[in-house]
Amino acid sequence: MTQFDEKSITPAVIARMTECQDPRFRQVMTSLITHLHDFIRDVKLTEEEWINAIMFLTDVGKTCTEKRQEFILLSDTLGVSILVITLNHPPEGDTTDSTVLGPYYWEGAPELPLGADLGIGVKGDPTYYSGRVLDETGKPIAGALLDIWSGDGEGTYDMQMEGDVGMKARGRIRTDDQGNYSFWSIRPENYPVPSDGPVGIMLRKMGRHPMRPGHIHMIVSAPKHHAVTTHLFAAQSKYLDSDAVFGVKDSLVTPFQHHDAGTAPDGSTRSGPYYTVNYDFRLRRA
Ligand SMILES: [Fe+2]
Image (cartoon, rainbow, N blue to C red; front, top):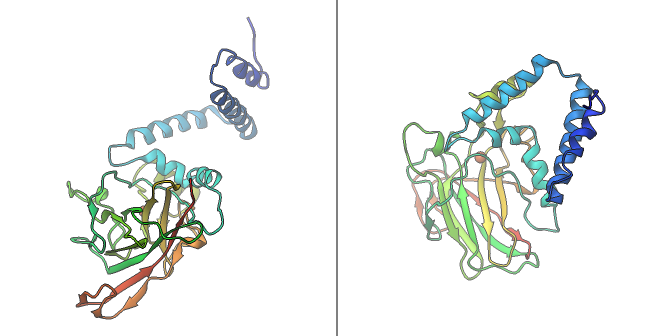
């Protein structure tokens, strides 16, 4: 029989992996056990704190539904998501920066023609988004796909709306032969990440607000190129300096130009004020 003390327990747990056949898994678990044990020794975790942590993680799991991913929210608010993304997608030249996927991605948004309005039936200021998708040398990419989603003009996502409203403010748009894209949607507003669950309790206890600056999400992809999961942030938005999920990158902050009623860039007549955004995405070759 071997008895362990507060130090010898760590190598003993690691040593139990001698039969592990997956070297990468072994490396990750060795580091995880080392840091986890060091953390517990460092803060001298009490039994009450340990059981609280277990109950907290249990609540995080129980809060997850088909439409709500509290673990992604936990990862986002602890800066883990953006750390993983930044490690795996370091900035490279002028290529578009990545940021968090967030908890509201819904696969299978309808593919819509260029210039389509994703904002039909969605509250908010109409906004015309246009630009190009380019490769790293500046050459336009024809047939690149933008998978786009956002909340409404009050910062509420379709998944959070009462009842089964289906997809709102979502769509997929392909670039034309010259790499141009365009679509209408709404101007995204600041919004709080869900704070009525365990992650909200954690944020309040940490003395943090749950707000994100106004942004629209997109995954931009094209054959033979690396896809980029990113946002466009509204330059006038509050909370750019204190995004609850640490997702802001300077290169993704872009002005939303205000216009009075009149003829929009796509030739349509707008009876009320609207905004325009022009932004070029650049993808790295695979
Ligand atoms: Fe979002």
